[in-house]
Length: 76
Image 1 (cartoon, rainbow, N blue to C red):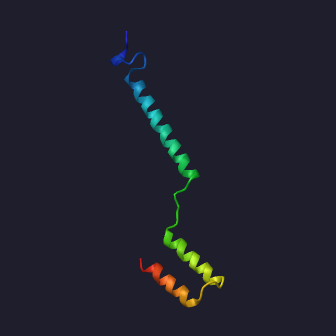
Image 2 (tube, helix red, strand yellow):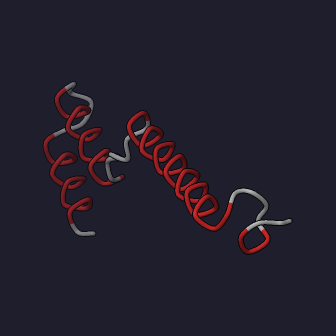
Image 3 (cartoon, helix red, strand yellow):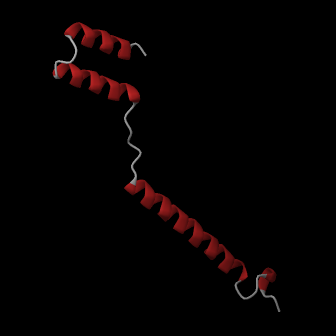
């Protein structure tokens, strides 16, 4: 005979447990991936500001160019 609700020997309770197992395994996998690859990414504006600051500190651009670039980046 097929057993309870036609699921063989597993039954409805076993099917629910198997579903919970796979959901738990999937959530564990998502957690592990998020730990190895964090979502922290800097915005493009922050990266540009840092680049302008480095160029100014290295003497590649003048103070006027620095101020102009920073104003342009903060106007967004």
